[in-house]
Length: 483
Image 1 (cartoon, rainbow, N blue to C red):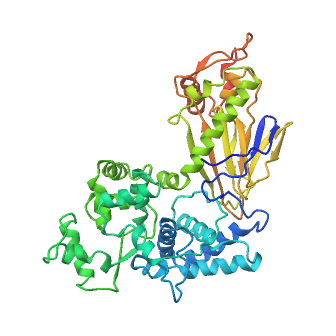
Image 2 (image 1 turned 120 degrees about the horizontal axis):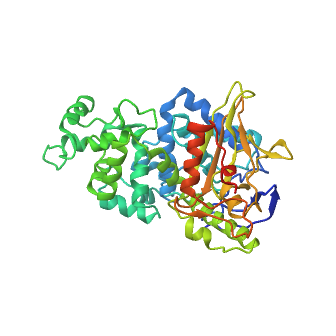
């Protein structure tokens, strides 16, 4: 668990800004690591990456693959070259087909022109992979930075650690669990095969000589084998084929449909049908058109952030409750993992930004909201009857009181109205955690003279829906429950 050092707690109409020194685990990483030393670093990375991907969208897949290969071995080592006395990861058979190094070099050069010797190549690779995937309609995830470039790179370590395309489900589970990843992470991250190409040599044994007897893999659809043979001849080392035919340039859920039809190119793809948990996930995404895939893919990369911010929300709620002399265990008992949620928000650039809100003025329907916004800005709140802008701070989390806390505290804590404006030039991203109770939780004040009547969270949500869709056309919220 990351160590949270709360440097200060500032109340602005009971909007709390908590400064945290480290939100990431293991390597002392943090969001906005280069704020002081190279404040425009991530913008430079994003814009330079966009220049490459806009010309060659197919580079997104190899860049994501490069990042995965880098993380799965020693971390920060796939970019190193071999020496006379050492064979680096680059020359290991699984990495011989890696490409996109020119993108990393180009982005690094662009950053070096502004901030020489500051930003590591390892951070650039992590940021480029995220930004490249986003450009082809993939998910967005926060990337804590502060990595140091590696000095050790071994081809043998790459061979021992990277899952080969021929891996069975037992081998895959062992490799992922060995890296601290879950079985769900295994099947979710395998979805990265929805983009990119593969050389015929990576799967030719499945269509020509699976067991050494000139046979084919029985786990591969026979009709698909015919199509693959028309593209890949025996011994073909140069031809490439799409891993997700028809949408290999778009990050979507089609990969799982292919796997379900026994049309995954690799044995490792077919292996997902050999385990009950991974098979169930494949079937779920196929049946629901990838209803949770993009969210799950993001979660597999920001799981530590979610865990950290969940614990933080509970701690803040307990402190605020104790400050009122109330039972501090209320939130731990009623706001459970299954009732709270993390949401990632994207606000596209808008040419008529002065006329359009990214998010209409509102108050939150929870106890607490913990928000991290990027450097673009756009969040505004009401203070003394005026809208004021909340200045972005990469080391700050914005903690907003929700209507439920206002009712529970009998108005001691106020929920602040806020909104999001749009930007003409750049898109904006934010990530928010909502501390919510179960629907049956009763919201009531312990005060002898309660301002609000007792109500359940279910009743509150139903009233909001009724107002929005039937009565007023907008959310009224807590005023509906005044005594």
